Image (cartoon, rainbow, N blue to C red; front, side, top):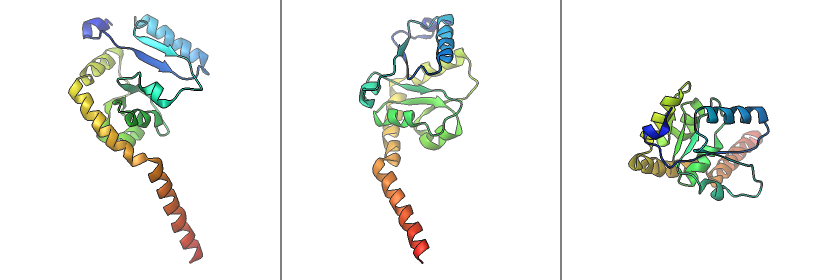
Amino acid sequence: MDFLNLGFRNFKIFMRGSEIYKVYVEDIKKEILKCGLQDFVVFEPFEKKITLKEIYDKFDLVLLLSEYEGFGLPVLEAQSHAIPVACSNIPIFKEVLQETAFYLNPGYNKEELAVFIKEISSEESLKVKIEKGLRNVKRYSWYKMSYDTLSLYTLLLEKKVN
């Protein structure tokens, strides 16, 4: 696939995290070479002393195409840093992100992914998703979580006492 013919010019895909699964990472690197994407993909080593702000400041868009997630914290982290999110159309992302993200159905091929990224890259659609994302993350604040947890414990304690 020729990404330049699809209109892609100056973009980078950052792959980051631990290389615990070395065989998996090597398979990804081989696919990147096979697809001619080596100029577009940067593998960042896992760093213990880096802030979320330093990570997300590099990104214009977070793309998380998991087939399974327990919760999907990285997509909320991205939204909290005003980064639009594109992700798999799986139940947990739909529940956590609702209409605040762009969705791609699992089972896509390379061409569908390229067209999807190009379609969501309009400045106006990104701006809308950023605004919605910033509102969405407020549903998951540490304050709200601690308040809800304390309220639940209080309710359970009252039921036990009565």
